[in-house]
Image 1 (tube, rainbow, N blue to C red):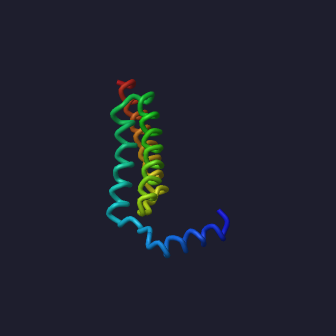
Image 2: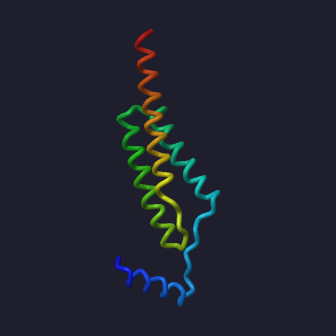
Image 3: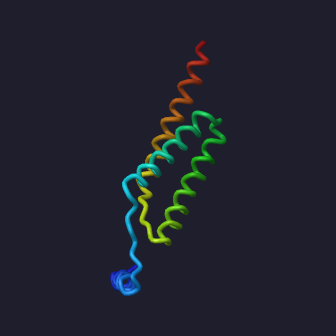
Length: 106
């Protein structure tokens, strides 16, 4: 969007008394924890061939969910929970790989 369009939207929101509020810190932390938990549990509890689609679906659900909530007037951070999902998925994959290696040594 150009600067003029952004300013026009802001003026329209002010005139119509429609304001966006930022999500509370608790809401953002709950979203981050939920996404990290999904990423970690997917790779710890499921085979890799199922965990990858589960994480991809969770990322898509995050994108759609934040857009849906934004349209209802709440701004939720999306980058931090997405990063939490990715890091937890990598950690879960590393745990899965190391546990498989440990089982094959025995």
